[in-house]
Image (cartoon, rainbow, N blue to C red):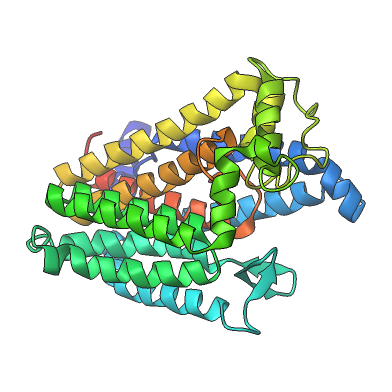
Length: 387
């Protein structure tokens, strides 16, 4: 009797079981979030004590950001891909409206020479962070809708180029060159993977490089950053200050670091230690091994994203494949650029390390992108896809 009842229950519930999430992807994301929380606390403890009188101030807020991000990730992972595919143009319009609104005097908040935030009481919203994920959603749908026209320059590349130009111009008004570089790089890589002609792709790359070069030359602020990056030791107390302090942190860390919590550079020497330069604190406290561990986690994340994309293509989910590729590229490229800035091989751009650095909009946006990736993975598993 009990055996028959067990068989009946098993039969009734078999169709309602939700396919499990990718363990490697979830393990990498969970480790990045947990490790990032520990390092944000370590990097911000002295700053928090000085500015607020509570050494756990930034830890509390970062934990709250992570919890909100996890909620957004969970909700997004349960969504249907058809919703995102249909809503891509609407999300693009929302992104453009928010980017335009934030630079209107009186609406956006001006901080450290940039106008990138809406402030509602104690909550700050950065539209450029939301624009990253919204652009990936739109471009993934664009690649599916325009699959037949992608090999034509006018109907394939030029149209998305106009969209990129509008978004890029709005970002430069803030100014936020770092986010523009991340979005443009991600979209170009998505176009290449989507099947555009090689010479069309190379023309876009050349145009992008030329545009960044011109924008740098005509802006004293950006030109100062580039020249400071090329030789930070020429002006170590002004234009090269951040990079010099980051390089000192890397040098002190050596192989295994000076120990968790024992960083000297975070003691008001290294600006933005808990945000843009969190990796430098990791390097100082945990050494080359700690930095290598962070790189390995992001490598796993990107590899799993492309494995999910391949599985989506195998089961006929073209939009899911393009979306998964875009999500992996977005997180991977931003992490790579942030690491390059910390290591001194790229100019300072004001980008956070995804899933790790302090920042509410950045954390929620990164978790949203991971949620999209999990939604593709869940759909693939539900259709019997194998990775």
